[in-house]
Image (cartoon, rainbow, N blue to C red; front, side, top):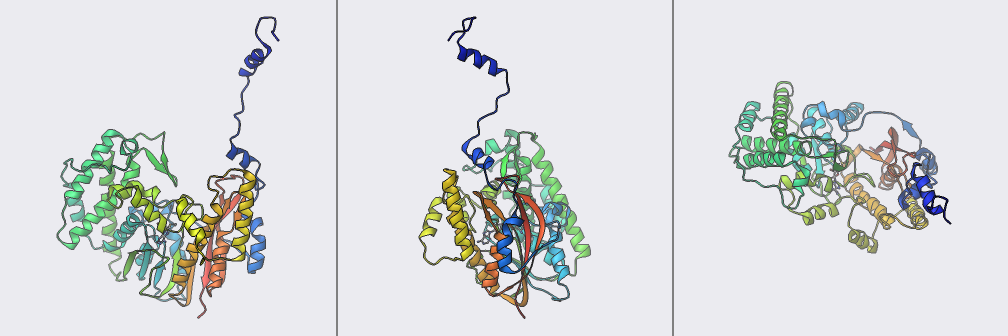
Length: 468
Ligand SMILES: C[S@@+](CC[C@H](N)C(=O)[O-])C[C@H]1O[C@@H](n2cnc3c(N)ncnc32)[C@H](O)[C@@H]1O
């Protein structure tokens, strides 16, 4: 049909509607989210049956457990690590149990950047960590093994590094996208200077480690990226060419200032600290411990390798994607893991299992089928592997926990494909199965689900106790 001005009715309608705001069609993911039965829900309600079975209540105990306050704390501030927990949280635990353990020995089987180890050392308690990411192992080790470095020598060496251009950014990284051209050139010059410094004495070796630590700490700030907590491009960032030199100098000054404080106010510290580059699932401990203070990877949380690929590449801890993948495959599983690893896992016969896990997997399988499409249809198996991995770590460390010892974990729960996953309660249950009692579970803060923003999740502190 034609209208009186000669245009077709369809075209006329189109012209009319062109003036109205259009609502973009939802893609399949958005559609599923908008229709989710979990909209407006919360993990407290969805945990009820599990809590009843465990015979416990979750205690509300809001407290700062995130890394951000560490940005101004001695030693902790040497490396920014958004996934870490707060030094104050570790201190609170040490204070809370000061009557129970006069001189505790402490372990963190997921040491990360070393918050537990550093804070324990500041209290003059011996502390040990295990970390599988070689970059994080290096950072945590440098943070506890360099306290006797002469700050003047550090400043002097860092300020007189040669400015040649020998080093080139790792070829497997997209460095020309990560950095502006002049920033990239200056980073390469800075790294060339660091590589040129050949330490002879053990003091010089430690100085080199501190300079490399400082270099690793400024890479993301110098880049066009931000970490919040995953690595992504930042459209608002403007980084000028001289920034790497400025940031590096500031970081070295910060470390030198902390070394001065350590040498003035903490000279009494004799306690040993050590971080092993190893897999917590299999590590044979040479020690026993009073306190295990840790935060494991969260179920659908961060990929601790890909998020650190830039620092790993620039510092020589990875030469390519294959090496990154191999470290990732050995870790407690994350949802960015290879499909083959999960296929192989699903064929294994000897896997950890329990009734809750079986029920959760079944519900998730149905939910994924109902949705029709899902990013990782193998998610139920990924979840199964997560708890199998956690079981292995827990079995290993509970075996070396002393009688009357405590195992304290910070962990978040998850909502995955409309299925609630009470990670904290499952971990507590595994602890029980391995012979510990659940002393308490405290809610430190509420979180929002990444998938369904209106769904309230939590971050909890689980305290497990070994009978004396
Ligand atoms: C939540 S982070 C710990 C952060 C730490 N609390 C801090 O403040 O720096 C978990 C850490 O566990 C490490 N990890 C994952 N699987 C591991 C395994 N099987 N053995 C040892 N470390 C592992 C990751 O590389 C990551 O650094």
